[in-house]
Structure formats: structure tokens, C-alpha cells
Length: 345
Image 1 (cartoon, one colour):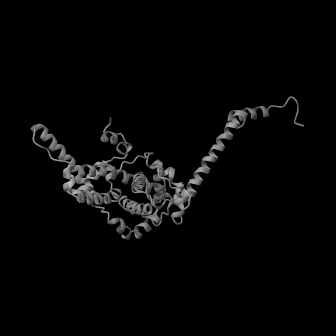
Image 2: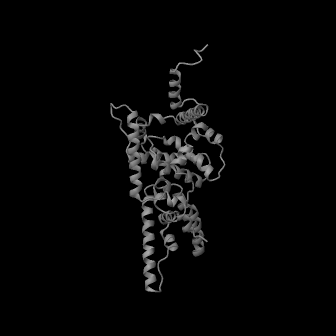
Image 3: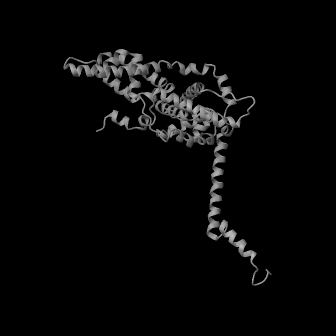
């Protein structure tokens, strides 16, 4: 039977969506540069467009992630599905720019698609009716784009399940610490509902490492209890155990440092941060062709339909002897010869 670690290493989250910090930064810089290159010819050259930088794009994605989480809470979507939607959203903007696709539109699509991916029934009409100024067509317009941006990887492993297992183990090891365990459970879960979704820890660490980092922020003693030091015994085995524990604790410490950058209190404070100047800057450098995603998708469908009709007509010409350049040349040659039966009546 495969272990939980083996199952995780075979998942698309590990194989496709795990990056080193340097590689993730490189991808975002490349996405930003490519978007500028594609959009620049469609904007006025004088004055030169002031594009948002890769760092500013990340700030905009973080702001939109907060809006997504608040919208999900308003809609009554369960915690884990809101987390799935946030991860879908952040994955999409690794290889797509906010200058190309508006985050305020894609966050609605992410919420709807996360409900479908995690088997939580919420009809399209119900969701669009609860979000003011949103139509069903607007939500669906970005659905295939979202799937493409995620490379059709819909499986997301969250740290919530690992937390429940850790709490069970703590209750077994410390049955007399029930109230302390309860408080640690509540506070750790509050961190997991926000901090990992606002940072890049899902791209760098496993769900269990994320859980342990959050638990360490709340109660370091419990984290040490779950990862005990080496006991007495063979010196070689003790040294190997100590070395492995140091590596694990080092990864957890690095993950914790990232989580502490975005504490749960930011859920209510983040939107107060002055984002208006940056959002105005974004509006001035958006891709004109994709300002209206519904109209853009409609034009793409019409273009594909016209191409199919054209290909069908060309095929008919080939079958019935029309449209061939060689056949046209032969017909002109025959027409140039005097008709032995006289001119046409």
C-alpha cells in the first residue's frame, strides 16, 4: 500500500506545480515580459505605456486573492473549496498576466470551477445572481482559459487533512492537554485558511510541512512533540536521525517565515491597503483585445466557425471539380481552342 508521501509525489501538484523560489520568480518575470511585448503594439506609442512590473503583478494577484476569499465566504462556499479556488487562481497567474486577463473576472470563474472540481453543487445561475453585476456568460468566458493556465491539473492537496491527523496524535500523546490542543487546533486552522493562500508555500512545500509550520507559529511545543528528537541507541542511527530532523525543521522554519508575512488579520486589513493607484495603472496597460472576455471568446468562436465553413467549401470544390488551380489552367487552354461544334447558342 502506497504511503501518503508516495501518493503526494505522484500528484500533479508535486510533479507540475512545485518550483524553487528562483524558478517561480523567473517564470513570473518571463510572463510579465511576454505580456508587455504582446500588448505594446496595441497601445498608443506616445506617451509610452507604463506597464506594471512583475512585483506589482504579484501584489495585484494577492489583492484579488483576498477578494476571492471574501466572495467565497459571502457565497457560503466551504473553506477547502475556497482554498482550491485560490490555488487555481494563483496557478493561472504564474503563466498569465493580469495585463492580459482581468483578475476581477477570473476570480469568479475560479470559484465556480473549484465548486465543480470538488463536487460542491452551486449552480451557475445561483452564483451569478449573488455576485452583483455578474452574468453567467462572464463566469463561463474564462473557464477554458483557466483550465489551460492550470495545465488541466485540478487536484489540489491542502494541509487541512494533515492538521486533523496531527490533532488526533496530540490527543493520544497528551490527553491531559485537551484545552491547549483545542486552542491550537482553532488557531492553526485560521492560519491555514489564509496565510498559505496569500503566499507561495503551496509551490514550495508539502501539505504536511505547511501544517507543521502553521502549528509551530501557534504552539512550538506541540510541533516538537510531533517531530521528536533522537533517543538513545546506535550512534550511526542517532546521527542520521538528527540530520534528517534538522533538515525537516529547517524546511518548516523557512515555510513559517513565509506564512508570517501574511497573518490571518490581513484578511480584513488587506483591502484597506492603498491599491487604487496600482489598479488605475493596470487599467491603462490592459490588452485592448481582451478587455471584454465575453466578446473576445465570441469572436474566437466565430473565427473558428468561419474557418470550418471555408475548409468545407474547399473540400466540396475538390470533390466536384471546382477551385483547383491545375483544373482552371486546363479549362483556359481548352477554351482557347476553336470549338468544333460552333459557338454557344
